[in-house]
Length: 576
Image (tube, rainbow, N blue to C red; front, side, top):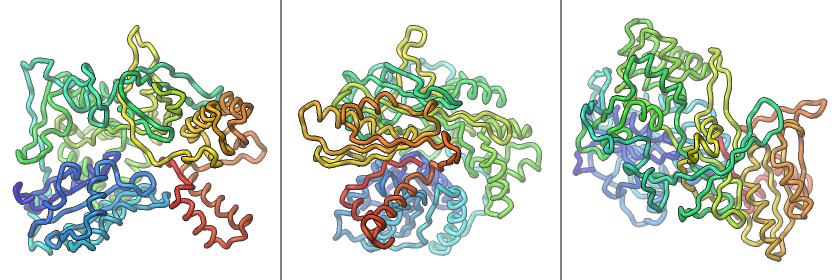
């Protein structure tokens, strides 16, 4: 940190990009206070170098899975756990944690880093911030940040420059005569990595897996549930039942074209956005050189409602003073501003295109918009197959997301609609999906004789299809297999009872000892389930079983289930 002369370094532990976004915003804030700031991926840094006098390290830490660190913070987590004799007394720090209250291990990673740094002698200069994605994460962050900066100013004896104008991080360069072989066309890492594929495959180098099957699972109803099979032959990719597959989707071309029209730009211009801070290790916001079309299709998130900092920075481009005022208000922490953002942006599900359509006076330059939009992220799915049965194929089970918004628009989920359109052959070409595997802790018991109970409603059945295949395979090998009990639920038996044939076959072959199914809307008393609280409700049901059949008090029952968790006998694979 010393050698780059930065006063503030913001480390992020990010799985889906939000913590990284927040880190970028904080490092940009630092400039407003006359300090230098930079966002840093802890994977690329040595912790020891962060402890320099008159400097501050901010940690934006997301929690993933069952209280785990995100992939890019795993090394840092291990380092913190292993180095008891490390002296971090020169380090000033603060932590903002990102989590979700519906999970058992709410913000575990942020809380751990906050506590552990203090144990190692570092000095906390501002209280741990807790962001809850089940509520309003953006609002939690803004409120924390509002109080955080005055505390920093006081600590370092600096004053805000009063410069609230927009600060550009990147400058635009248009390429007029460039060799198109040097231009990125959607690759995630290395240029041309989609043409010449080289293992190993990971988040920086995904494998293009051909789609060998794409079928609709449900027999009726207005939803589209689908089963896809991806071919990984020759990729050297290994997976186990319970792992997750990450796919890199692309945005809908109709949406991209509309953005080009409303901004009045030629989307096929080749450009680079170059960091104005030459010392920064992040040279570009996305792979450059590329075209605006490629950036808006492959690299930028254009479908989520924009966060308040985007509105704040774009406000200057609205010619109507009222629009300017509203955009700045929505980014403030005033109650009316928060309420306006909540209703006009979040509840109305307005993406950047909808905002531009509904605010005709707002005409931002496309390069500034591209600088501000967050990166389009990989999407994770629980693998619905067993590598024992399908070593060269990965199965995905998902439901297509599509809904009407309050403004009468139809919003479509990026990844599921993109997957739905991945036909096995498209105009004679094989359809491919850029993907990699993310290891998970969600596993069948090591001993095949251990009995298992599986609870997976709707597409939540995905990992259990892999488990059932695996138990079936073990049985075929002549292994003794314990009891295998499945609880599955959906809306209507004749509509969305997915994998019905496979499940009934498994029951017939005694692979499933018991198959329990419930159809919430096939009865007099319609039952509506809240998917968000599914894991909590299942856990509560287990408490009640322990109370009733184990004659325990609620406290004892809670402890009993907690013990099952720590012993790895109760696992969850939960998606918010």
